[in-house]
Length: 246
Image (cartoon, rainbow, N blue to C red; front, side, top):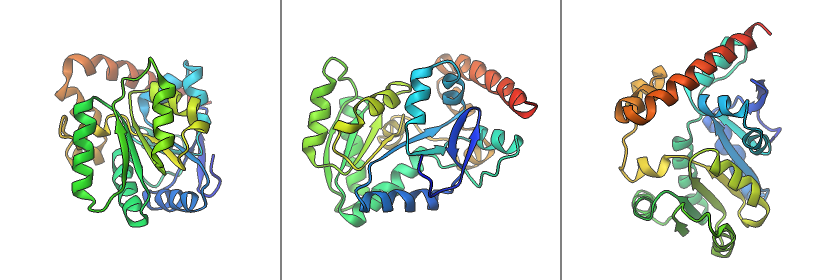
């Protein structure tokens, strides 16, 4: 992990207890110095799965910056006595880094989602960031030839890579190929492209701040999400109690 920012150890995981401003500043410094940075965010579901999925846990622990995404983790860490100033949501950091890339003429590469969604995401971010250098983009269904996609990214000249694939695939892909990607910064952004492309909507700000973003997702996709959140939230509550009284 990067040692320039404050960090905590929570649920057997080292993570940074930093603000958005501190995170962006650290990433900018690393890119300027051509210091490779592997980034990840952790939320309730990921922390729960890491307790049993050792490959995912190793992929997260290999990262240089581990941000806290999700009010559940923020509150849980605070409940256990840690100082956490705020959440650093992956989708918000994505937009901050696009602005950073635009200011500094850093080419970016988008990887993930369907052809339609990643193409629309590219269109939207170019409209929002006039002058942004887009090195390229590719859909997220390439598992029969990962090497070809890695070669494409390396040849593109991108300095920043954003990977919008579900967990744990994106974390494990990034960790597996980190030395061959040829970028200075790589970050998994989950469903961010779906939000940017307008395929799904993000929870209202008051729900995000109140920690109910998960509920908004359940209401959008009840058939797929209710069981996932019931199980992970229950498991997280049990982990918190054990952590608190350990």
